[in-house]
Structure formats: structure tokens, C-alpha cells
Image 1: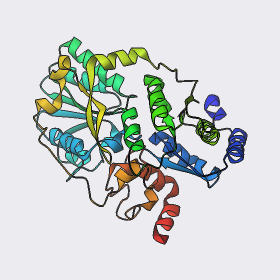
Image 2: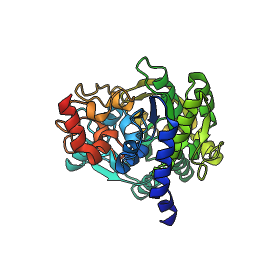
Image 3: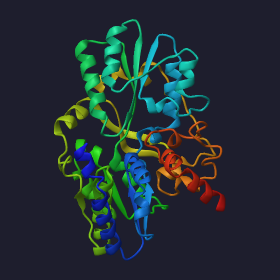
Length: 370
């Protein structure tokens, strides 16, 4: 706890906030990529310590939030089948599909189980050889290695009843999709430190150069985030463009090469659909040919499912940084954690959930006044 307290130390926070105010001379818009960073910013009021010229917008860094409605409906369809044990992270249970969510499937008798790791699903497959055990594989580069290891172990054990419904995605292609959009507002990025622990940050170098945007790899505590903002603002003010690593205590330039090797062995890059961003080339993973037998989408023949996002839900614009949650007319009204229109309101890393938890009254008042 002492180590964590050092990164929440009020005098350090105040020094960094003062340095940012002294450095900033004009308006800048910075996007934090990770939902964990968004929640920290809202929880600790980091944005309120900044000068008005600095606008923090929230990116597509919540794995639950960017999982498309089609994948949710596929999950619901599989989970409702007899003879299936459907395993998922807890965040996915209340994400609305077209007509229901996984929690409802569970209430209706489906065998839906919350797990903390795909390796738990492998154990369930061992324990229930008469069932098909399906793990809903979502997330960024942070969680992909454990999913890859689960497939590797299942193959080594000769398990025929373990499957993955894969919706894994990669961060760099999404950054490029945002930067190349006609609605792009981003002038600098705070990259997600947890992703870079696995993948390093070398693949960000060509993005920074191509789009002329500073990218700072940043942690998740107040001192981390404020220091990341200071580094980004300093680059912007001086007309520099590079990738910097604020999170050096955890991130190396090359990342975790062992984790990368298992991912590259089990998966291959493919075009993947993102909620709010659409199809992004080479932005996701699917099982490689040697491991295709573990693919739930093919096994259950559900690729035909095609759905449309909720018309009143503006989570897509939130995930692109085009609007903030408080600018959605449904925020705090029709859309709440109890009656969510989209994943950004129910995920533990969702931007709408962060605003609802920490800034609800302020956001609703702002929304009414608009």
C-alpha cells in the first residue's frame, strides 16, 4: 500500500498540476485510451485540476464497451443452448444484446458462469466432459496471452469440449481509425500502460510519426496520469512528436516477448468489428488454422447472426471521443446502470459508468442546460 500511496501523494499531485498550468499556453485535446485511466480521472478529479485549455476525451479502451452487439448476441445464443457451460468475465453479464443479456439467460436456466481467467474454463471442461464449455474471449492485448495459454493447455490435454467465442482486439489499429476520421479531435494520446506491459510501445512509433501526435505510455494512479499529461503537453507546446514511457516501472520498449510468442502461435490478426468504430482492418485476432477446432463460432454455426446497434445509444461517439457521456441526451435518464442502453454504462471501465458513478449530478445538470 505504501507503494501505491506514493502515486497518490497530494503534494506530488499538486506539483504536477502546477507544472501543467505553467506549461500550457493554448488549448489542447488529449485522449486517454484506457477505461481504467478514465475512471481514475473521474474518481480523483484529475480533469478538474487542469487548466480549462486542456480537454481530456475518452477513447475506446474498455474491452467490454467495444465488443460489438453481434458478438453479444452470439454469446447469448450459445449460452442458451442445452449442454453448454458458458463462461464469461463478470462485466459481460449485463451488457445488453438485441433482446436480453447474459444475466437474463442465466435467470432463464442457462448455465452461465463468471470466471476470472479462461484457465478456469479449461478446468471446467475437464470436470464436465459431457458439456461443451465456451469461454467468451474479449479484451485487448492485456488479456490475450492468458486466452492463448488456455487453448494451448486444452490442446495438450486433448480436450474436445473446450471452445472460444473470440472477440479480442488490438489497440494500435483503433488509434489509427480515430486519427484518420474526419471527426478526429485528438492531438495527443495517453497510451494504456497495461497493454504496453505485454506489447511494448515500439509499434506506436510509426503512428506518432504518421499522424504527428505525441503518445505517452501512462499508468493508472493520479501521479502517473498527471505526469503523462505533462509529458504530452510539453511535447505539444514544443512542437515535438515522439513516444514517451511514463510507466517505466512496468513497461519496457519490447514488452513481454514470451507472451507475444504464445499469442502469435495461437492467433492470427484479422479485421474485427468494434462497437462505434465499425470494421477496422487487422484490429483483432482469430484462432489460427492449427487451433480452429476450438472456435465456437464455427462449431455452433452462428456466423449468420447480424444485428444493429440501439439507435438512441451514442456510446459509439463516446468511444471515439466525439462526445462526452454527459452530452448524450439519454445519460442518467433512459440510460442508467439499472437500465443501460449500451455497454459503456455497465462496464467497470466504461466512460458512461465513470461519469454516472463520480459526476452524475453535475453531468445531468449540464445535459439539461444544453
